[in-house]
Length: 392
Image (cartoon, rainbow, N blue to C red; front, side):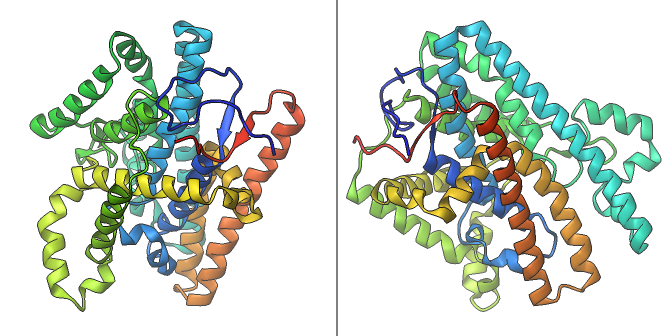
């Protein structure tokens, strides 16, 4: 395994080596997030309660967005530096267009699956997925679909990610004036969202906002980006800070686990009090604080146990994180297929467990097929691999 001799993603210095590097820890946690997203996106999935996302103020989406911010800093930020601003804009635009086409393709395939499921079972799956708009107003539905003003259930992550990347050239330009301008502008947008209820519409008929409001989620994304770029100093290893982060996460666990609230009403009461600060759609403040605390813990653990990422199981998930777009798109479709099957078998415990395992294995298999293909086609320029930095 090659170890990259370059500045790490959490370094306080600018990257100097032009060699592309992939960091196993970041890709591993992205892979974990993808599996959790698949399992959590199966409605009424009895095994979703075992996911660690039920034991904190954030879930797999927050983990995925934070890791994506780090990846974009390493890949696109470095590309802007090495190839010039306008070449970077072109690369970013191409990626946005790729995400846009994948998003549209997933929705159309998803709609076809809901129709097929309705024909086979007699259950109105299109209405359940809020895709019945295609029936009533097909021309308007297609128009708003292309304008990102119509986003069915469970398909809101890619539009939000497209918005993050589309404003990246502006962020890069601001950083060349002063790096702290990025966080100042990002925080200003976040506060403005609350003051003036900034949002985009995901359902023209009902007026629902995007489930992932980009005016809020951009703060978490660009916090990760500034850390990955080395624009703000990452906290040095500190035992008191680590203990504080662990205590904060431990306090969050009982407040977040809904099944426990049935037996301890006081926890349910406290959860209700802090709920406005945990709202998912705007990426509320406690979610961001929790994400940063969890990131500090995970980074500390990754540095102490860097050999873990060379184990076979970790390697599988790391490869998944490297091919997040095709894996995520496929998981969106697989989760619906799994949902239809689970309804048919009435959520029997063991069969649903088997369905979850098969779905996860299919996603891992897809990532490995893509990985082998890329290695065969582009083996000379394949990026170097490093676990995570241990330099500070």
